Image (tube, rainbow, N blue to C red; front, top):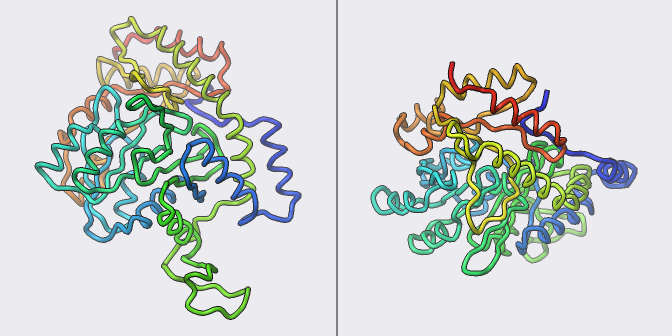
Length: 386
C-alpha cells in the first residue's frame, strides 16, 4: 500500500537520536535550545518555543494572547479540528469564515465582510492549507484596521514562502502575524515523532509561551517575589506540561537539515501530478498561486463531478493499493460545533463545494518515481462515476 503520507527517516536521523540516548540529557536539555535555534533560522522569526505537539502550540498561542471566556475567534472551516478547538480551550466562541477557492485558505474578503457585518473577532487563525500560505498580508492589514490578533497556523507549511511588495517571507516568520504555529507529526514536512512549536517576533509573547509550556514555573530573578537560593522557583501562572524532549528535538534538528531536499522532492511530485491531470476536465488541480514557493504538505485533487465520483475514486484507489484521505470535513459540521452553535450546511459554500470533491493523493519525499506513476495511472483509470 502506498500511503497518502509518511515520514522520511534515514541513518542521519537515527544517529542523531542515538547520540541523545547515550547522553546525559533526555529532556529539558541542550537539544531543545538547538532545535529552537534551527527553527528561528529556517523561519526567520526572532523567537521559537518548541512544545509537545501542534495542538499544544495552538493552545499556548491562545494562552500567550490571553484569550479568555467569551472572546470571539475565527478560523477557516477547511482545517484540522485543533485550529478551531484552541479557541474553545480558552472558553472563547469559535466561528468560521469561508475559504478563497483560489487558495483553499480563509478568504480575506469574507473576513472583512465578517468584521463589518457580524463582529470583530479577538483572534483570527488563518491556516496555510496543504502548504499554500493564506493571504497573510491582506489578513494582517485587516488585523491592523480592526484590532484583532493573528495566529498563523503553519502546521502544513514549514518551508513554504510567499512574496509581498517585492520581499520574500517564509511561513512562520511572523512578518504578518503575532504568532505562528508548526507541527512535526510524522506526515508533516519534518517530524519529531510528535511535536510542535510557536514562533513570534515579540519577546513578551515568547516569555509567556515558555512560562505556560512548563507549569507556569519560573526561576527568573527579575520576577521572583523572593529568592531562597539557586534551587528556588515559583509558579506565576496556571501552566501545562507541554514540554518536548531532547530525543524529539535531536530528530528535529536532523530533519530540518534535510528540509531543502524534502521540499524539492515534494515539488517534483506535485509538478508530475499537475502535468498528468491538468488537461482532464474531471479534475480540479490544487492551487499554486503566483508569488508562492510552497513546500506542499498535501495534494488535494478535486473531482469535478463531486462526492459520488470522489467516493468511487477512494475505493478504486484503495483496491489498487493506493491510500488516500479527505482533508477536511468543514469543521463547523462536526457535531460539537453544530450542537453548540447551531451551525448548519450552507454556512460556507466555497468550503462545502471543495469538500464535496476533494481527495488527497499520496505525497511524501520517499515516494519513488514508479510510485508516482502508479498513482497517476490509477487516478486516470477512474471514470469518476459509480
